[in-house]
Length: 139
Image (cartoon, rainbow, N blue to C red):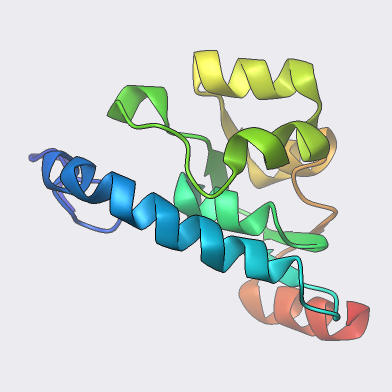
């Protein structure tokens, strides 16, 4: 993704994706609701640029481990899309109402160390392998 075209992180044209949003929302909402039915802890390792749906999915994890050098951003308003995957309900539970509002309105970009400080992740590791090891230890 070069940034020369209107694309999200997955390399998909944002205007084309918007046409599919309603149907995807229904399927995604059902699938994500099933995560709450799982009777084991869900642990997420966040590395790279975690934005939009990736963040929404991570919010359903019981424990989130960030990898140094990564970035976390809501990324909703700049892309003219609506939140999906119950993000509006999950984010305030994780980050609190004030930070959630700031993330929506200012589209705050967090370095993983800042994400740890504000509670978006519970632990920080220096590389992906260390994060995976930590995830296995927590599980």
